[in-house]
Image (cartoon, rainbow, N blue to C red):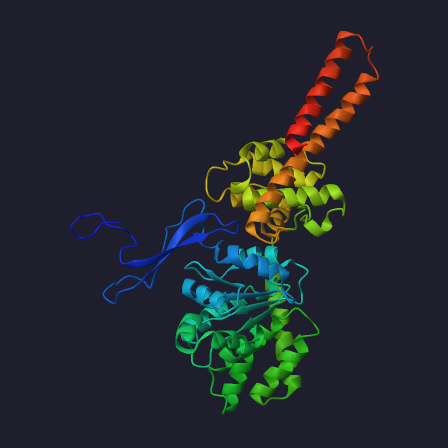
Length: 426
C-alpha cells in the first residue's frame, strides 16, 4: 500500500494480525483487526483474494473445529461473524465455531460444512450467531436463502442485548458465551419474525400484508411434516384462521413451482455424484481413503519420497484413484494445493474429494497423525510391491529357470524383496 505522500507502508500497520488457514492447517492469508480509533479503515482487513485464498470458500477456524464437529453428538457448527468471535467461542469451550472471511455466508461455505458434517447428519445443527443489529439480521436472511441445502437443522442465536461473542466474553465471561446457544431459535422462526416486524399487526391490512410477506418463507419449507407446524406458528403470530394461512402458503408454493419451471434449465444426463458412503466397504477402500486424507491434511509431515511414491501407485478403487491422480498432478509446494486438487476433479467426484479432504483423520493428536500418515504411505507402496511380486512369481513359472529371462525375473524378485524390507522397516 502507499500513503498520500507516495511512501510504502504495511497494509496491516497498526493492526493485530493473525493467520488464516485452510482446512488442512496451511496458511493461505491473513486477517487484521484495527487497534486505534484514529484508524479510519474497516474494523477487519484481510489479505486480498489470491488463487489459493478465495473468501467464499474459506471458513476461519475450520482447521481447529473440524475434529470436534465430526465427532460431536449431535454434530454442531457455530457460525459467527468475526475472527475474534471464533477465538472467544473456542476459549469458552465452544470449539466448533467458525467464521466467514469478510464475506456473506453462502453456498460454497455450505458445501464446505456439509463435507465435514456428512450429508447424512440430519440430526446435526448449524447455529448462526449474528449480531442483533439490522446488518446482522440481514446476514441471517441471506443465509436463510441457502438454509434448506443443509441436511442439518439450522438455528439463529442472537444475544438478548445484541452483544457479539467476543464482547460478551470480555464483559460477562465464558459461561455467558456458552449460554448463548440457549437462546437459539429455528432459522425459519427467526426469519418469519423478522418479516412480521415490518408490519402493523394491530390492523387487518397490516396482518394481511404480513401474511403475504411471510407465506413464501413457509412455502420454502420442503419437509411436509414440518411445514404445517410453521403454518400454525404464523397463524398464532398473526391471530388469523389457520385455514386462511394454509391457503396463502399453498398459493405461494404453487407460484414458486411455476417460476422454477419457467426458468429451469434443460435436464442433463450428468453422472450422479460419488460419495464415501457409496464406495464398497473393503480394506482397500479404507486404506486408500485414509492414505489420501493423511496426505491432504498432513502432507507437510510426510517424508517427501514416501508421499511421491504413494501418489504414483495406482489405487484399486477407481474413484479414489482419480482423486490420487489429481493430488499427484498439482504443485504441492504451493499453499492450498489440497483444495486445488479437489477443484481439479471431475464434477461427479468433487463431493468425494471434498469428503476425503475434510473428514476426521483417525489419530488422537498431530504427532500420531503424522506417524500414521507416513505409515499409510508405506502401506500403499508395500501393497504395490507385493502385487508386482505376485505377478513375477507367476511369470517365473512360465520361463526356463536357467534361461536369461528366468535369471532376470529372479533378480527383479530379489530387488523387490530388498526394497520391501527397506520401505517397511523390516
